[in-house]
Image (tube, rainbow, N blue to C red; front, top):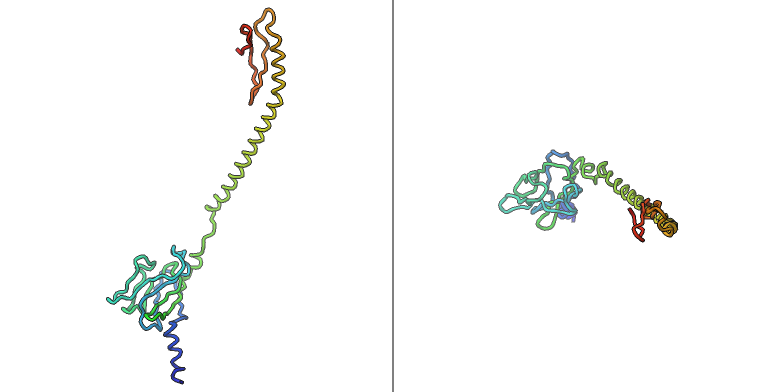
Length: 222
């Protein structure tokens, strides 16, 4: 029983892996990732802390597999191409050249689903990879578009008011103009002259002074 109690922490470590490993570094540093407590490592997986910083989605993604040839297999599209290498044929130790956005948790997965994890903090990632706020360049269109819309609405409103006032003026002046025209037309041609005084003819949007004359029995404009 005493022997079992002494071996229990080791058994738990083998089953759960190294849960507390943590590394800090700056872009350009080289760090070593170790697979502790895993009997037969078969692959490494990375879960980024700031996936948007690398143009990735959330979740885990494989970054390296063990190979029977002794040369680890690296996915061609993973973000560590050219910066990650194995220090032994069993992929227990990796060396990573740090870059901005590398922060995350690295999992060493075993053949029996046991794993070891290492949390990596790249200094500056929290600032470098945060969601950018609006800059002056992006803020300017945000203010300009509403202002242009408001100006368009006010301009259309003013144009509609002017059209309504003009229509009302035309309606009010039309009866007076037609009455004046009939009064002058009824006079007919006077003796000794063929030309009448100028008659005011109503037309919208403007009033024009049109000279008139008699041609036979018909009143026409000159």
